[in-house]
Length: 110
Image 1: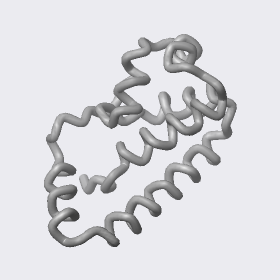
Image 2: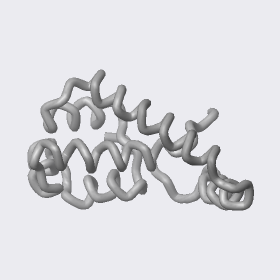
Image 3: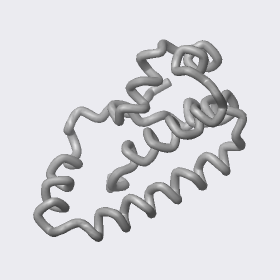
Image 4: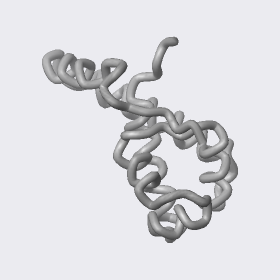
């Protein structure tokens, strides 16, 4: 299946930003959604992508409707695409090489 470029990066950025606006630490968010703090760290460091269930639970825990969280994610993806398009070709190629499937990114199965 085709992958969306920079999805993990965009989600990580949006989650950190929204968690901060909600004044939630990683520990508090983890406690609120019933997971380990390390899982929140994995989401915020682009190691994991959330399942749909996790996405919805996180949106509720940070007090944001899931459609708004998704809209922020789409906005960030678009901004990253524009940013990548402005990069010199050599830098873009290096970024694309790092985004190849199988680089260790794991989807959340919760």
